[in-house]
Figure: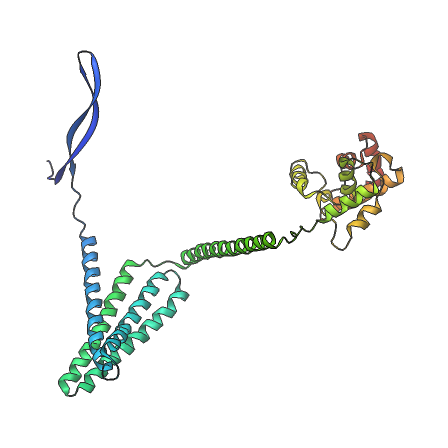
Length: 348
């Protein structure tokens, strides 16, 4: 049995080939398709109607409170000023509810606008009641009380509407959302700091250029200081020999340190070789302590250097002595000589 379905016609256009006398051209073809019409979404319509009714109620509350409180304040100031100030009474709790809605995923942040909104609502209702009492007569008093309830009804409808649209999160999901928001705020703060630093650096560069001031030179690293001292002590040594000399003492070029780390991770070589010396040891003392190139070192100096490398290798890894490959690389030894020195230092 076929089921009745509502449909609508949709008109389309497309290019199709058309051949006349052996010559084909692309021509425009218009065609129509029939598509089903989805059923009416009554839930969405009801939500839209409730939202519209809430907006009208809030607008009525603002109008009533502004008229009542403005008439009350007009006895003391100019009517323009009085009615402008009167509009702030309802706008205060409406703004607080908007802030509460924006902070709906952060309970601690939403608590302050919620309390402030309740306080602003009570103040607005009290002002409307006072206007009715001062107008005189039971009828005016009753009008004042009923008028005050208009703001309460508007706030109640707004609260119920926001609760319907909001989503209640469990504790773990709420913490996840708060962490993500915190990370986003941290990135925003970092961007602001970087922008400020860029502005200050730009202003400093402009000032140096305008007054022809000398540019500030970067502070040299321990490795750069030690390399300069090593070049002074060993003027005939090559760059590779200088780097090997500093590596024996524990100083490594920061640019090649990452490569050394990657090699040690894969080959399980000595981890300590790539580390820098402690800050308390001056770079000059480190360099001047070993001034002989590996090619001219005596056996005693090679044993002393091998013991230092072994201590560096065992630091943090007591069961990992220095390897033959490390001795070959750092002391420029053959594999047989490196193995002999390793047996003397390690004892196996």
